[in-house]
Image (cartoon, rainbow, N blue to C red; front, side, top):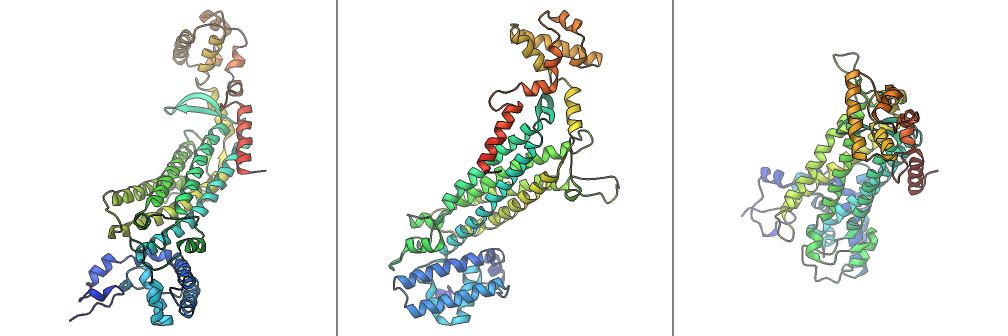
Length: 462
C-alpha cells in the first residue's frame, strides 16, 4: 500500500500528484508571513509551558529551535518546499529537522486554521502601523504646501468648467480632509485587526486547558475572539482594510488626474519635477507625468483586490474552507501598492512646482467672477433670480464681443442696472472675490488660515 508522507497524511494511502500539490500549495506567497508565524508559535509554546500542557524542558527545546529559525530567516537561510504546502508546515518541518520529534508537540491545542488567522492579524497590524504614518506624512506635506499658497489664486471647477476663483491652498485642503477620513478609517481598522484568534483551534476550541488571554498578551493583541467559529472564519478585518485601501487609492487617483491635467501645456498650472517624470523613446521634447499616471492606474488593481475577496467570501459556510487560501495575495498586493503609492505621491507633491502666474492669469480671463456680479446685485436688493438672468445675458454678450466682465464699461453696466456703481470692478477682482468668501469652510484667506491652523494642531505640526 502506498504511503502519504504529508504531516497530515496519516489517514491517506496515496500522495497527491505533483500537479495537485502545486495547485493546492500556498508557500509561494504565504512565506511573506514567516516572521509572523514564528512569533505566533513562540507565544503558543510559552502558553503550553505556562499551563503545563507541555513539560518545561520540551517547551524550552521548542522555543530554542524557534529562535534558531528566526535567526536563519533574518539571514535568508531558510528554504521552503512546495511539498510542505504552506508556511506553517514548512516551518514545522524545518523545526523538526533542527530539534527532532519533540517539534511535533508544538501543534498541541492548535490548528492551521487559527494559526494562519494569527499570522494575518499580526501581518496586517504591522502594516497598518506603517500605512498610518505614511498618510500622516502626506497630510503634513499637503498642509505645508497649502501654507505656502494661501493667496495663490486659481479657477475652481465644476463639470471641468471654470466656476469661481478659489485659493490653491483651499483646493489642497480639500484633499487634506479626504486623507483625514482615510486616516480615521485605517485607525479604526486597527481595532478589528488587534484581536487574537489563537486558541480557537480548527473551529470548536480545544479540550486542553489553554490560556488565550495569555497568548493574546504575548502577541500584543488588545482583545480575544469570543467565538471560535468566528475566530477562524473572520476575514472582515481584511475586507475592511481592502475597502479602506480602495478609498485611499481613489483619493490619490483623483489628485493624480488633476496633476496630469494641470501639468499639461493646455493648463500649465503645475510642473512635475524631473525626478518624478519620464521621457519618450521617440519624442525628445516629452516630459511625462508617469508617476501620477501609474498611481492612477494602480487604483484599479486595489479595487480588484477588494472585489476578489468579497467574491471569495460571499458564499462560504462556517467555518474554515480551502477558499480562504485566496485571501492573502490580494492583501499582500494592496499593502505593497498602498505603501509604495503613498511614498511616491508624497515625494511627487513635495517637489511639484506651482505656476502661480499662470493660475492667476486663468482667473482674469474667464467668467468665473460672474457670480460676484450676481451677488453684488442681490446685495443691492435685486432678487437673485433676476440678477442671475441679467448676468447670464451679459456674459453671452461679452462672449460675442470677445471680452470679459472686467472690460465692460461702467456706462454699459449702469444701462443694465442703475444699482451698479464704480465699486463693481473691485467686487469683480478675483482676489477680492476669494478674500470675501469667509463663510465657514469657504475659500476666504481667513478661513484658509483657520483650516491650516486646525490641521497643524491635529497633526501637532510646528
